[in-house]
Image (cartoon, rainbow, N blue to C red):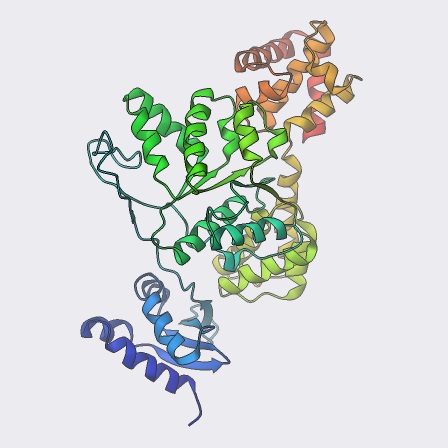
Length: 474
């Protein structure tokens, strides 16, 4: 007997019926119609988007098991949602959405040793007063390796991430530090490693946290006199993922506590994964002892993706969102947005939104107008290094002179202008601006910005400096 969509779905239904309540089976599975079977992919028609979302949230594992029994390990499920077209055309609109095969991350239980001085260990992730050692991994299951596409720009980082996920704490990539510019996928890769580890080793406690949140928790623990609890909590984690570790810059107390946590985890064969927007060698105001530990493992850079990778990313995004788009439009977006994957996907999302909300066909003209906005925004993103170079060139001096300790008036003014424009055109903190422009503190930057504002009102020549430089950053 030949295998058809009907026969495969019939067998799946009999398996599903044995494993859930009769009412749930009647509500959520009987209305489904099998549509087609191609190789190992079964397409099923569901009545609405809500229906698809409910199945994905509550029954994705059951569906996967049932389908794998019928079609093997590589089985795929595609939902087809038919919606009425209320805009004149008699044809119904069809959306095809592949199953993510992933349910939400379950909470993890942490065993606290009874020998601990304080058996009622405080979890920094729960409201004070509640004794609870169940912790959420804080991982996003949608950020996984399946949709982190490999290319020349990320091959080393992705391969190292896979190696760590297969053997956490057991490779020489400990810590694994992933660094690169904005929107290149550092956070996505960090989550993907964690998600893969939870899939392979459900018993391991994985925790993802931003360096900013980690710092806030530490400050809170100092206020409440629970610093030791804070350290002990993090020392119990099997896989610790800290995002944007450069945020620890200049925070000596947080760096000190992280140093102790890091040492304990590393010595006990636990895995540490870090992300940063710069390489260890370029990190400012991070203690030398921490920087040397960051270099113990592997520092892998995520670079700007090449054209082929950008096309693959866009096509994958469209496939996962159930949208079809002409190759010429995908090609135009990929050719013009080169530096940032987040903006690349943002442009495609804007196109999909314009098309669906305004009921407009996606044309090359529409793509061109949306891409132009994204490219203009990209040009406005400037770094502190770039600002220092532009200001130095304008005043005919080198960057080292601008950063020097000299109090000569024209150099001081150039330095103050660099600080002023860094505050205006970057998202960096005052402390970070000061540390990068000649190792000054945040008070100096604040004073510089006030001085520039005052001089702009009282000194005509100085106002011209501001106007000239402003043009170079816009």
